[in-house]
Length: 506
Image (cartoon, rainbow, N blue to C red):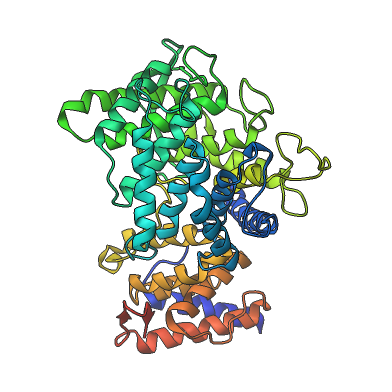
């Protein structure tokens, strides 16, 4: 009976006149699919642990805070938002209220920069909605941006402020200013030009020549096509301050800073300078490729390990690359963090926490790990990445091949999101129109339970129907429900339409 039922299910699929899902794929793809699930779980458990570290009043303590709580609190709140915690969460609201009250007590480049990044994320629009903040928050954000511009050192970079220039403060200021510009705030273009000058001067002057590769069709994390292209790059790293030896964390910072400046310099008169920035980023990536490691901070050992991993994320995402040298930076780093996470959801801090046992955690290290896993930085250069989410509008007008490709990408993207973000994103699939339904129905017969469950969740989200499908049910029951879905679609496809406002197909 089961065999006959299976045959009936398969016989119905050709009637949909659309291709079903691609086969499970080679072993690397299967490993990546398994890693995505582990990453999602790690993010959820890590965010839960971090939220539990919030103190009364909304603050997050950290050994790295040096007596100040503004920076650690802003960074932890940013990490929680990227991990899927909604901005109307009571804990987030408590932390935001604290930051409103106390941000001005100790103005430092790190803390102010992270606060700007936090407000940019707090106001970021989702699913086609524009960036939006209350007027008071916009004024607050602009005040901090103006302060960062004002304290830029004469040499072009940033310090705490005062006392010269270092690559760490400089990259944080630039990250903030890029987010501010993206959010519609005023940031002079010359600020990026001056900054790029000191970034270029801070990089090693020479290095080993390596072949240049170009990536296409990248997903920003797991895969891309690589091809050898004319030209060479040189292995040139960055140190913390001018003429100091390069390390992994500072080279990642230099790559991020160069990529940001190059992307923000638009005027014709600074085009050559911007091209120099692109080359500096390529050379920095060559250094990171040669010295690649995710188990420690290259040339620095365990010091600032999680800070380095978040820096590697920023470098990879801003440069828009999947590969750093011969290494896929995200899968390797994500696997390390998944394996290193402790049962309670925390990661062992890179530095000992005074007054706490060896099994304690730290809010800043925890935040850096989560920001790496969630790929919290938007692209500046290179191939498209998964940040921001794919725009599905107009997809129904694509050719069958391109439509299937878009669906595969959107489905993989959905699978990679934290659980808390999936339900709302699933409704966006309605923007692909009724022709998405048979491809989703076909996935109900996939060999992987996770794929079946995700397809079921999308179908329910866009239609409001279920036909009692259960991804974990015995095969015969699943096939019967899939048959019911198929027959419903075939009977109704001529009159089905999309309600974009409600994100429903009916």
